[in-house]
Image (spheres, rainbow, N blue to C red):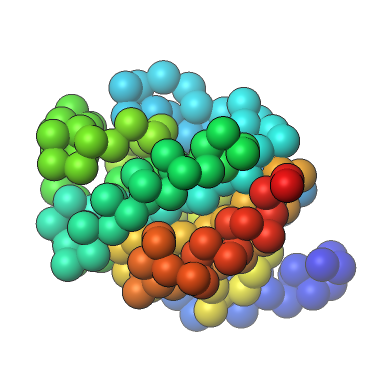
Length: 187
């Protein structure tokens, strides 16, 4: 994306919803430029996963889509040996449906869905205080590809570029999600 187009996009997004992009966001070229904090409080640089595909999903424990954790775990188990990493990003942005602490969220996910894929600490995924990865993804793919609810999915290719934005309603086991994942994974 050219700098001029990126500048126009940033201005439109800022006017649209108070969203701002920092100089660091604008300088980012791939997902490998971002770091989250893990649900256990440790640094979680996405560069650790360089060469793998990532499915980054904003999650919530009290949402009608919460059963997607089962599908995310199944997808992780099916494709992790081929290089897929599912990353859950708990967020309270939509309907206040993730009010718990990191420890409560982790316990809920492990107890109810046997989640063992990487999870981050709770983050904002929309608005001016969104995690830089989410601001970059919206700037890269467009505001219409930003999360509109819980369980929105971003697919990152093994080279760190954004391959797809997949809406909430697309179940992790659906043909839409599976086809997108298989497209970016090595054979």
